[in-house]
Length: 115
Length: 115
Image (cartoon, rainbow over the protein chains, first blue to last red):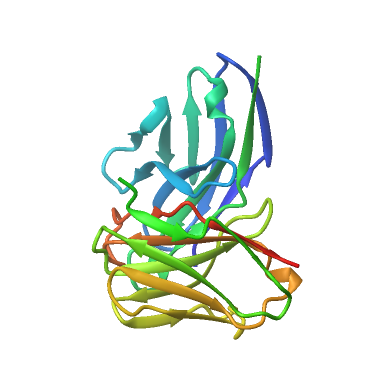
């Protein structure tokens, strides 16, 4: 079985500051990891995905994430926060066969960006 | 441009009155998913279709049913909505189930209110 844990349900940063959203995974098979963003009353939009190619993954809107197997982590970062980054962020894990191939989401982290 | 379209965006239904939510896709993907997302929670998979094959999650209540008449359309039927079924319902698609880089594309969601 797979799962992800997102540390911190709420994160607040100042505009221009570093954004760091934490995600740790648990998987019995090589994991495939995703970060999604959700704006209020909207669906989920894919930010980036890790599929065992490069460990540092770059996504849209200046976000990136690094897969660290030794730490079972896939933290999301952005060097400089913008007001438009305020949203809910979900980390998700997916296996590669059968029922493990469904997406399992973490509980989400709400990012607040202040002036 | 919208690839996964959910209608309506907002739905109000009466307690116990059957309601149907619809989803269509222009991606010609094999897999369609329905997720339930309650306030401040992670999306929870209800079921998915791989082509015509229906796969129900073990903990999905019998009150929730789904139909997929063709590749493009998928419906979520709630036979007797209760107050606890008020949530955002998200439809998603993916090209297939197995490969890791098969990301899921989400619609904008339908917010269901039960009165």
